[in-house]
Length: 114
Length: 114
Image (tube, rainbow over all chains, first blue to last red; front, side, top):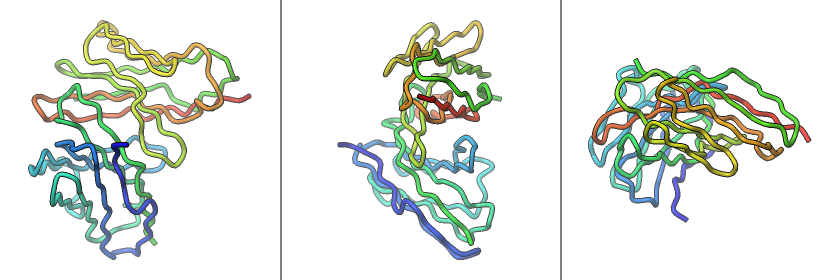
């Protein structure tokens, strides 16, 4: 089945230690998104790629970076995680990023910062 | 700006009860509207969507109608099951061309008791 895969499902890091979260897709979609979801809150868009074009949200901290080396993979890098960055990180894809397109979500990576 | 407001939860129902979760939105232009469901420990799954006024989305017994005059997209189900227990997110997608972005409501937790 075509899907969005996130690894690892659970990640523990130390305060200030860089961490990378991974997302891959077999849907061959053009757009990949990263969301941050804190406990009992709605997902919040951090940034997205349309193909190789990177689009950052205005209020996304500089501490968060992303890479998309090819169509299938996208990475979220947190350069110096703080306690406030503990959250579920969700990757999603859509075919063309149009307003009517459905976004397909992976299972998420739960990040703990010690 | 664009926003989505959902009724606060948790909503607790007995099995086979009727469900309504209210959702209203504020948006410029012509957004698409979505309901996503999140089961414990999982990512978001699309439940249904509607892309223009008066459209009705439906899936697995759930329905919602895009009401432009009342800016609403209420979720309904005639007879809930224990397996419907989850968090439900209403969302809108706005933008132009390939810049569609999801804005989520705060989520409503549904608990269905046998």
